[in-house]
Amino acid sequence: MNNVLEFRAKCPHVESLSDCREALEPAVMKIVSDAIGKGYTAAEAAMVVADIADDYILMLSRRPRH
Image 1 (cartoon, helix red, strand yellow):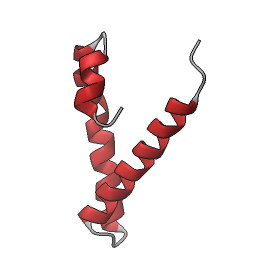
Image 2 (cartoon, rainbow, N blue to C red):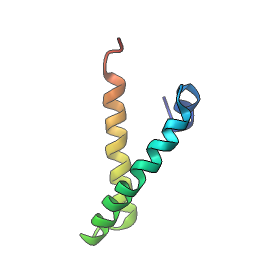
Image 3 (cartoon, helix red, strand yellow):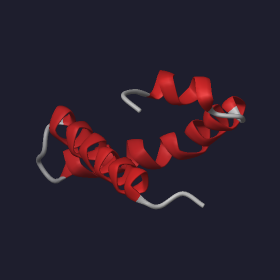
Image 4 (tube, rainbow, N blue to C red):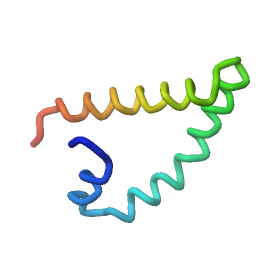
């Protein structure tokens, strides 16, 4: 899986991804805002959030499928 668009095409519940984003986006924006408040740039904060998410996706991809 190289990108979100590839995943979405295979996802049986595409609309749930949109719902999930709507639910999580405010929390992610708060994380970025909090990081900015601690002196990090918005780009740094966003990159770290993306890096954490990428690490998590890689971890999930390594789990055995049942």
